Image (cartoon, rainbow, N blue to C red; front, side, top):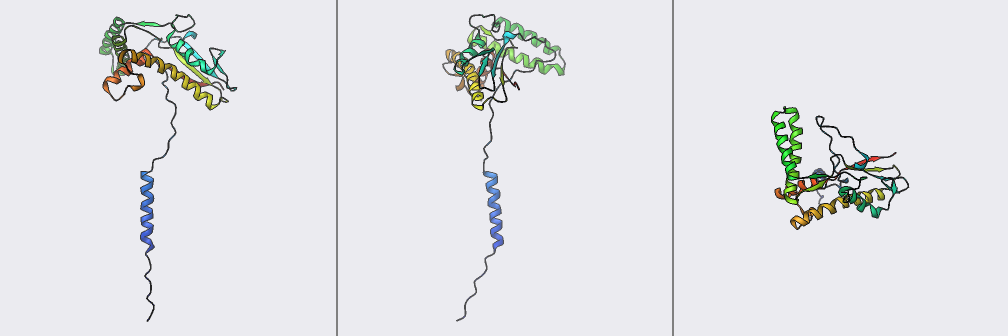
Amino acid sequence: MGRRELQEINAGSMADIAFLLLIFFLVTTTMDTDEGINATLPQKTPPDMPQNIVKERNVFKVIANKNDELLVEDDLLGVDELKDKTIEFLRNPSNDENLPEMQLMTLAKCEESITTLKRLLGNSNAENSKTWEKELSKWEDRKRACEWFGNYRMLPDVALISLQNDNGTSYELYITVQNELNAAVNELRNDLVFKKFGRSFKELDSKNPDDKLIIKAVRQVIPKRISEARTS
């Protein structure tokens, strides 16, 4: 009895299948992406608005040098003291002349500003309308804040936290300083929201229309303005 010859396997179809599987995995696989640190930087002043000279008292200087030392307002400071120092700058509870001169925000002041801005909007051209619309939205948020939280003391618009890092600053110190600055802002925001609504600021959902209004109002009362730069 003769031997039966075995049929050859068509390898061409196997290559096609392997190619299709490769495409499938490339399309469906998610890649890890690096995420940065969220920070809200000061907005550029509109060209048709008065230019203010920033006084030294309105800038909270934080420097992390190449020796991993923390200089706050030109004084050496422990990282564990930074949060309290930042809160003091943001609120200036004792009206210290070396800290920002807080502005009293009242419902009447908000309504007056809103009326003025609406008049300007009615008389402005299309090029300037966006500027005044943003300004109007800001004052409406401030009005809402007064209605919810009462009159409050507000940082000047030019006040900010200036964070400077040296090229030799360790990443660990950089992250720690960022965390402490954010913790100061979050603590003040959480306290404000909890007293009125019984929730913390971080529990607010920006996708919820009502919560979104609260978030915008709280950001007017407790702004987060951090400007970053390198010293060398």
